[in-house]
Every structure is written in structure tokens, then in C-alpha cells.
Image 1 (cartoon, rainbow, N blue to C red):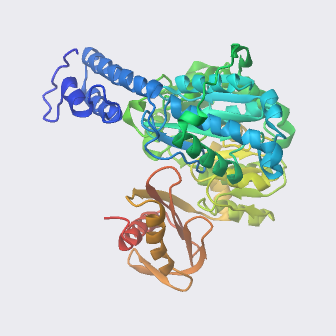
Image 2 (cartoon, one colour):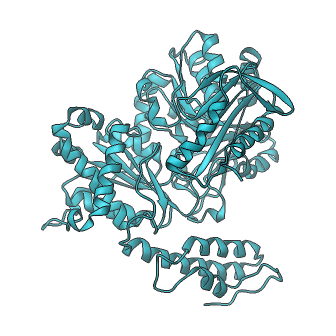
Image 3 (spheres, helix red, strand yellow):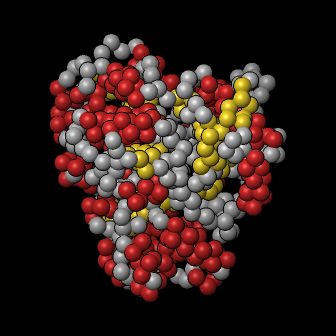
Length: 589
């Protein structure tokens, strides 16, 4: 292994030392490949000259070569049982997610389609009558930029084709684009190998049925059960899957972004967004600047075709090159990650400025104008008002229980209804095609006439339309709406917890002490609880209409907090109170 220069740092470790610390030669189970990768990344970031950085990158590549062998050859059951949550299955690459385990989950899905003909309720949720129809209509299959994702996707494609399914192979692409491709191709379902915004060590498996939205509980629960049987008895279920004749003819390349563009154009009258007119105006105007941060994710490969012909001087791109490590950061739309775009926009002289950051699989997006940040709590409500008042569309708004009540205030003022389910985009199914906008606080959005899956690109199109059509861009528009419907200040946070399952549920029972009529001391003052909502965690609404929600994460060993206050300064007070509440019931040390 090449030697890397010691940067005179007391925390310096050589590549050899790091490999010795994390790797047990010939023993994948005992080796911590991502501990090694993170250690190598930390050292690479300290290097200032290209030569030293290159040597550290070579060491990272060697670490990933070992991980590749674990992903491709591993036969051990997933360290954590397969479980489909609000957005599919996620786990650690190599330890949970590898070629064997994704084949097992794919086989579980195939088995469910074999059961559809005998179970009408299941068939209705799947959107197909039987497995013959599913095979004929086929599956849209793609993956994000994660290490090994293409290998995993190819193994899924081989299994599906070997079992007679047409496979529309999209390659690297985004979640919202895959959803659009299901609707355009009329495929039976889709699979996307992605863990969305989870850290670099995660892999994931997203499944959507024929409606192109996150699967209903009747399906995800069945996948979890079937997968457990297969993992426990691989010698019975995982028989050779290749047919006698090669099935590669059933694997067909798909331009999934072209499908997305077709869907947006087809439904222009429903949502009022004229994609081609927006692109034409971006080409001709010189009073704006657009900045996009892909965080190295799949959206980077779509930029030229998604926004064709925009002058380079108007279009700033950040982190638009491949890096499955994400340089060690949490690859999510966040205030911390937004700083790169905000700094760039502040230097620009144009009167209109729009920045956006997109997560690795392109289903979440957050905005900035260089000064203000617009998370989905604010932006989703703005979009609802925009479609209702400026596009002349009528109908309700849908947002999760963890999302700001700004949209509630707007809907009440417009004489419209609000649909407010638990967290998870699949909870919007009852109002898809009715609600003008569906969105959740974690930066996911879709609109009427589009996909029932969250999609960063449709959010971007909305933001561009608002910027181009309304004087002053997003800032002036938000100020206008707030002056009429009130100011709301949402925030979120979370802490890691060690308890899981029944032990966690038992501990959370301690929160039942906070019920209607009791008070919470926060920031030195007493706040009386006037309402408690328990459809997803525990949401306590206080007499001043501020609120606090505590719920377990569906994808990580964490408790998440969501708050909304009537002043900016009060947000941190309630977030601190949430941590104290968990400390009192023994979930935080």
C-alpha cells in the first residue's frame, strides 16, 4: 500500500493502521468496511495537495473493493431482519443488503404476485389480477449512486427476467422519475435500489405497486413476512432462477427521464405547469441565477436533459460528480448542506435567485434565495396557495401530521379542506388525484396530475414557475402569504436511542403523562396542552397553537421531534423540552 504523508496531526493514522484496525482478512462478518472508509475520508480531508489526496483515494478504493466482494458473495442472513417501513427496506451494505438478500426480497415480491389471483384484496392493492399480467406489464427497475447499487440492480433484473418478467431497466435514476415511468409504461410495479437520504453505509430497496406510489401496508407487511421465510430457508426457496434459455431479451433499456417529461406534458392542464414554456423562459431571460446541489446523487445525471439549453452563466452546479462516499456528509437537504448554495447566491448580482439541494435519489428538495431557506413546511404551503390562486385550481391540500400548520391556515382562508395523515407518503393514497398538493415536512412533494410519489423535480419546476411569474421571487411571495395567513415557525430534531421494539414502545408509554389539561414547562414558562393527536407518535398542541410531536423514526434507531412555534426564538426551547421529556422516561442518557 502506498504511504501517505503525515500532516503533523496528532490524530493522524496511516492507511495501514486503519486497515489493521477495521479489517479482519478473509472475514467479512468481522470487518467494518464503512468504519474504514470513514476513517480514510477523515484523513483525506486533511490533505491539501493533490498527490496526498490521490494516495488516500487509492486506499478508499481498496476498501471498497473488499466491500464489493462482501456484497457480491455474501451468503449470511441480514444482520437486521428485513422490514419494509414507510419507504421500503434499508440496511447496511454488505451486512444487510447484498446480492443474496436483494434476490431473496425480490423472490418474496414474486411470490406475492403468485398469490394475487386467489386474494382479491391483495390483487386490488397490487393493481394486477395475477402474475401473468404482472409478467406481461413488467417492472421498472433502477438504482441510485450508492456503491454497488448497479450490481444489486443487475442481480434483481436477472432474477425477474429469469422468472418471465419484462424488465424496463432505467439504470441510475431518481425515485420520482421511476414513479413517472411506471405510469407511462403501465408497468405492474417498480423497484429502486436506494436508501434515499441515509448515510453512505446504507443501501435500500424501494418497491411501488402499479399505482406508482409507495405500497400499501397489505403489501409491505406481506413482503416482510415472505422475505423472513426465504431468508430462514434459502436452500428451499432460492433454487436456481435462470431458465434454460437466456432471458436477457426481457431486459429492455428505458429512458426514465423521458417518461417523466412526457407525464408532466400530458398533465399540464391538471396542474397548470407548462414545462416547455418554463424552459423557454429560462433560456431567454437574464435576470435570474439558478444553483443546484446534487450532493453527488442520481439527479446529477439528469441536469442537462431536465433543464436543456439554460446558459451556463445562469446555471451553477455543485457536487455534480460521482462520489458514493458523499465526502462523508449526511446526504440530505439540510441547513448545513445548504450553506454552499447560499454562499454562492449571495455573491451574485441578479435580482432573482433560486437555489435547490436534492437528496441522492431525488425525492426530496429544499430551496434558498441566498438569504432565506425554504424547507417543505413553508414551500409546500406556498405551492398550494400558488396552484389555487394563480393557476385557478380548486381542491384540498394534504400534509402529514408532522408538517407545519401554515397550509392549514391557508386552506381555512380559502375555504378548502386539509387531509392530515401520519408520516409516510403512502398515507396520501386516499387523496391522490384530489388534493392539489401533497407534501411532508421532510422535503417531499407532489402535485395533482403528477405521481403519487414524492419528486424533487416537480418541486423544482414549481419553484422556477413561481420565481419567473411573481415579482420578487420566493421571498416576496412568502411575505405576501404570511401577511394574510399568519407566521409559522416549524423546526425539527432528533436523538439516537438504544431501545427498540417492545422495549421502546413500553418506554414511550411514559409520554402519556402529557395529556389534555396538563402543562409542560419549557423555556421557563408553563404551556397548557389543549389537544393531543396520537395517529403517529404523540403530538401535543398548546393553547397558543404551538405544538410538539415526538415519534420514532421509521428508518433509523432514533426518536424524531417536530415543533411549531409562533416566534422563531421559541423553536429551540421546544426542541430542548423534547429531549428532556425523553430523558425523564429513560430514552436519553
